[in-house]
Length: 446
Image 1 (cartoon, rainbow, N blue to C red):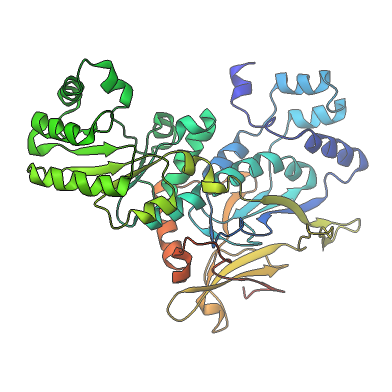
Image 2 (cartoon, rainbow, N blue to C red):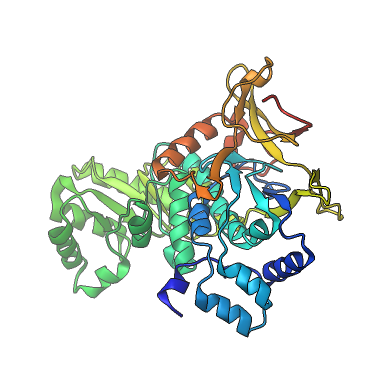
């Protein structure tokens, strides 16, 4: 495999995308205009809101969605597609328009998180890679948002790299950062996306040395007194005492990775204060999720390291997104709405537009999805009710050119603002219905 092949995203797809393409091109319908919508029919069971993440990664994937000579040859040799389709793929570039919810925004049932407009041929083959990115990243961000909301002002550190696929770990760090995590343990996420990284030592470092004191001295000599010392390899009380003896009151933090974290945090806090290390922070790790974080709210904990549960979406590792054709050009050249009607998997036809409807206090009350309405990117409206509506779709790709790239800091800020707009019930961690309903309207004011 060549380096060029590794840089493309075109074969991160399902076989049937290309067989559909071949049949549509042969039938003369592949060049018909089409509108696809990426959405979920429902929130993951029990969740009250979802968080959009992966937009930037999806835009990068679209930019890199091309077929190299080697890939086209592979498809020919393997008889995945015929020669005419292979020739078409050799010059493929997406030239249509894409609108979508920006990163950090909230999503609900039937939210048109992404709207893709182009020919059927050039839009249909994006399906798999877009769903792969959105289903993963939105699941991670949705779980991470619940965790950071439960943590309040205390920072959360993403530490799930060793619990998932090596590339998924990078995407996980990025998505968690959008949803409020302050840093990650993953260095590739720092290199690729600028997510702040942090880390000190594991139990193996302590076990390497002849004594725990030797390990602490080696770490402090290398990293300074502001480092975080892991104190539960042997006896926590003895370790805390040694740590302060070696560093004095300027020890940055201690980390507890096992046991009853709430009880231990109180004990360690009293011991640190008695030893004059009142400013030394307590960081806890060990299979934390949003429920464990919430349970530690009254404990003297200064930060949380979250691993497995953020990497697996805390029980919901996917978001349930689908990618469906909702409008297409007919034989007369007119755009018509289309919809899937099969049992339990229905879709709503027509190009969509979405608004977040708010009350006089600015609290979100409904997700309004306009049918057969073209997206707009401003908040102007002609009616009193619409004046409280906030437009959700923004241009991401225009005439094949990506226009939606933005800094992760913007996504983080957007997430905090959008989350603060939700009704107070959104903070509840118990299983429940979506915190706001989705309302369909035949059109929206433009």
